[in-house]
Amino acid sequence: MSGAALAQRNNNNAPQILIVDIARVSSECTACRAASTQLQTQATALQQRQQTLGQQLQTAQAPLETAINALNGKQPDAALQSRITAFETQRNTAAQEIQRTSQQLQSTEIHVNQQISTRLRTVLEQIRAQRNATVVVAAGTTWAFNPSADVTNDALNLLNQQLPSVSVTPLPQQQQPAPAANPAQPQPQRPQGR
Image (cartoon, rainbow, N blue to C red; front, side, top):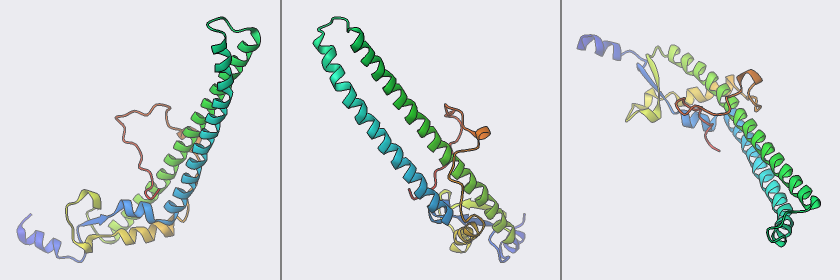
């Protein structure tokens, strides 16, 4: 493209490249803030439950250790063996509960991020098309830009209109993530501001 053609193309009213601050949108949008608050409440509840279960296990474990130490290497009788088995069951049940709840929280975070990301892509495409721009770039990936190219406020306003809330629930069953994440796959971003 000749210099004159490029200058003419760049002199139209719309910048060819638009910039959006994804982190700001993710932390300030109405649905993002509400979801972030709910996710934080769930994470706090999980942490508190983990502490409660840990304390219960410590309380149950202390007398067992005392009884085992008093045996001086001898085999425990049936009653003590039964208490040990009950404690191990209690410990395993607690671990399973925490793992299940942690996976549910992770699935919920992924679901929230999917909903926001899907709608934000639609909003950004809408803005790009309206402004007849070539591309929308995340502000964090640029060194410098003209403030007139920044569409963050527009994206935030449209996202708030089009996505007033999100479902703060785990992914539908068919979309559940695999138990072990593949480190080569990019992981979804958590909403900012938590």
